[in-house]
Amino acid sequence: NNTDKISEYLQKGAIILDVRTPMEFKEGHVKGSINIPLQQITSRVDEIKKYNKPVVACCRSGARSGNATTFLIGKGIDTINGGPWQTVDSCLQASKS
Image 1 (cartoon, rainbow, N blue to C red):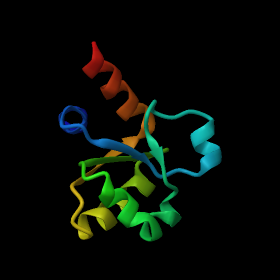
Image 2: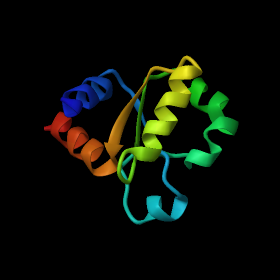
Image 3: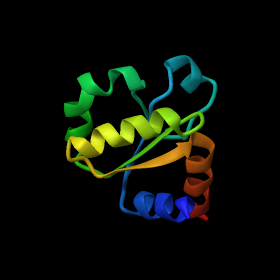
Image 4: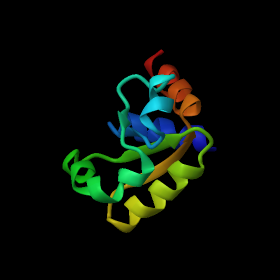
């Protein structure tokens, strides 16, 4: 189950990486998540590496975050695809209760 995996990563202190556009991000996002649009991931990979934490990628449906996940894993960053940001958000809320 993906939500278990997301919760496990959040407990490990993973950063939440939202790869949607800034406009989509502004309409709603996971509190504390970092917005780096998918098309900027390749140029900002060093920035992501500097966090030195696992990554939970999310977007609107899971397609863009899937692409980001594949790319980041290829760069040696421990990443999972969290799918829709609302799923990641509900996992985050659940972990706090």
